[in-house]
Image (cartoon, rainbow, N blue to C red; front, side, top):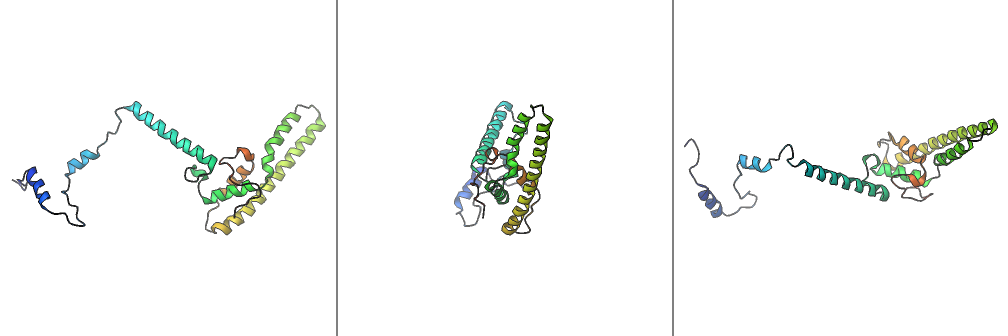
Length: 194
């Protein structure tokens, strides 16, 4: 009546069994829309929020552990987005391969802090001039390092490669102590990337 077939479910199943499967065909009846929608339904709000929160917490913890492990081993697949990619790896390896004046800033500042307890104007003047001179030389060293590194990046990855933000990435890494750099250095001093 009104276009509905009067076949029962058994008759429909028996018809599908009698037909032999064809190559390239679906070989099964198309599921009803309401059955497909019912199978795909998921609640918008999880009924057991406590269990969902625990699952989310363990997933987040696993991702953090993978990321921390990648920071130590240098595994590019699990590094955070700011450190991913062959260009960033090249920058890290180049900075780690050279001696940078900026990495000596922290130990020098600790010495300056110790010398600041001496109440002599002459010592204070020499220490102040020395700190400013070291800072200026470290900045110039970082600038010259970036110019050399930029030439190497263009030679290796092409002129179309964007270098935006890489100067600050290289400078920040060069001003850190080698032992405290993350991701950890993967090359020895003098072992420049090719």
